[in-house]
Image (cartoon, rainbow, N blue to C red; front, side):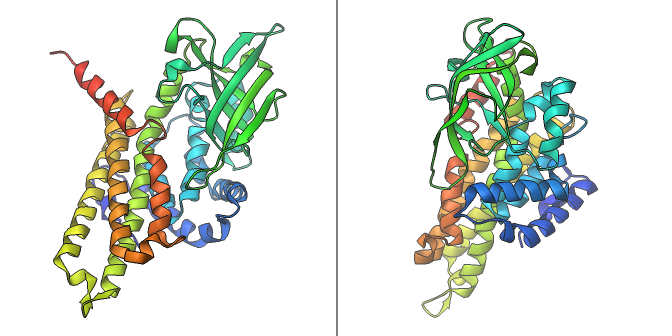
Length: 384
């Protein structure tokens, strides 16, 4: 059982502690029976349906449109500690519809969000392209008027989480109101829209549903645009502003699991006639792991609390949280592998699984290097 003493920090209210306890109990009872890592698509479908039935997805797509980021972080941390796919399934329901929750028309919200909330519709966020990853301004997928109040989409998206199993995509396309990032718009696109196909399923070191999408003469109603024309970049950044700190929370979940199993291992593993935990080098490693986790948690929940307290944007806070938590978790998990010895690199062991799971978090939703640029730009934009 992970240390939950951080829930006594002043960032949290009683409802957050209750949510954490409920999520942990639910995950302990249900996640092992829902996850089969040899059937990633099926596992995600089962997890989304079960989370919807349990009511957790109401936090990912709130009816009142107001995200409680502390709740999102608590749920991601808890689910990640139990299984990476559980975190993935929950997180994508929120990220995949965050633009709709924040900026969608009432008609679009009513058409999509109830199904996401109850776990009957799987959501996806289609931003990245072959030549446009961290640099969103390079998006090339074109959205052009097609007559009869329709819009035509042509181009590709890649590395799209839930690609191939999603029932709905939020797609960012170039509408050309201005050069670069100012000429993008966001659209709601049902997965069964003619002209939208799954061009390729993508495999990674920690299996998740990922795909390259192709749009060829894909026509949707103009009313499927989310927010104002040309506001796509603002919509994407506002969505990431909410969910970027939750990536740090997922990293925390992985790191806490790594520390838990390592403490158990060092207590039980004998070396030179004594428990591995008795060695000062081991104790130093455990102390550094625990300190890295608390440091990350403080940044993650500071960002979440700041957003929940009413800050319109938490760009700097979320970037710091995401950067430190993911990089620290990589270090914590690497230490866990080392202290487990041969068991740490055995395929399917907890440290080996976590080692594969954490790596992508340092890249998606803005690589660590991009977070550093964001933080620096925020600092330099302040008056001298």
